[in-house]
Length: 305
Image (cartoon, rainbow, N blue to C red; front, side):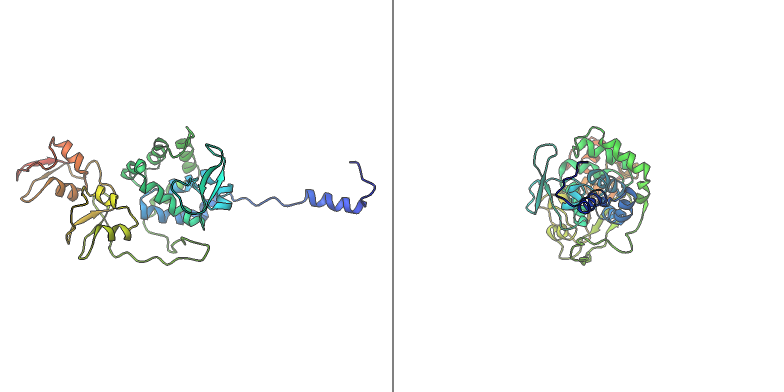
């Protein structure tokens, strides 16, 4: 190295030490990321029905396990772009130059928005018909629905899940003992308790029972859902009214019931049987070659599978 005679040799030595001895920025490992966010993923699974393994694998992949610029400076762990977003944002080259990405107050808020993003967009609706432990179906479905452009996206998610055994978190029955904070920036936010007790139908669908004073709007607000979801999941329209004791599903009904068939009783309708057995109305009609609104004959049987 050529030494400038006007610079003292001691200063050059100090410069050399500082130039080559700076500690590199500490990176989060995959195991650290999983340990930090597994409870949040489990919480999201119980609230929204998205497998915890899928949430964790997407977080690892989309955020480089917490080390990407979006994750570090925007708390965005899932690469969610602005899409009608009115909050803060940051721009980064992705599919296009200067793509707009959402910025969150905390990473926990990013996890919540990821669940909300999947739940409220129609193209992902079919995923919620899958079992909450069907991580392979979810991975392939996310690719099919266009979550990412990488043709190997499903394979990458499945490989992460199996390598790090993330599917073990899909089997956790209860919520974490210490619920994760939604907004870490200002401390934990207190969650308002739900008015309704959530039950699990025999066909493995979350539901509530309507009580006095309930409206579609109140239920949607309580469970952070869209009105369209309540109508669609329960084969209802805006003109329908709620009655005490009605069963309202919070998730889509299934394409088949647990029982093979049912006997028609006095007062039964196609919709009431659809609700009773957790079977989508259109599939109940299709399985029995019936039109919606068809009159049912008491004592005869309907196929449910």
